[in-house]
Image 1 (cartoon, rainbow, N blue to C red):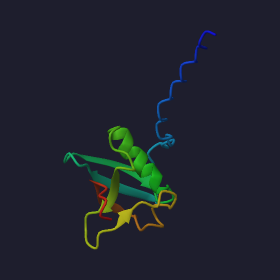
Image 2: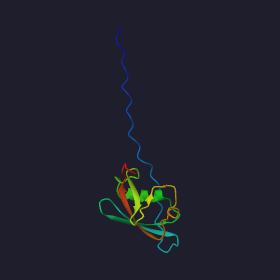
Image 3: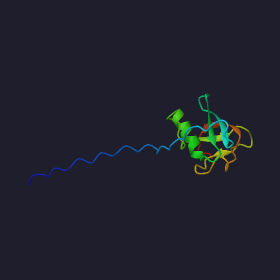
Image 4: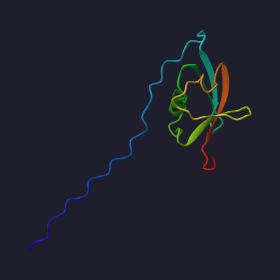
Length: 115
């Protein structure tokens, strides 16, 4: 009896990229709910953008990701630059709920396993 041919294993699909969040247009400077964020990136560069205080923290991470595709929320975290250092990882919370109001300076730093 002839050996039966076995089918080649199905190719494993590549991991899907993290779903992208729609980044709304930048609010007008005159909007009373505007929050100015200046974010220092690991390479020393700085990015700035206005958000609404009702925007979710995940929108800030999306803005950072769009500035450099290697900067993902699972590898980096936003922290305040002034003590006591605050970590901003509550993706569904609004900027107001996590205390980001007015004008803020943040630092994007690598996530360490020692947290």
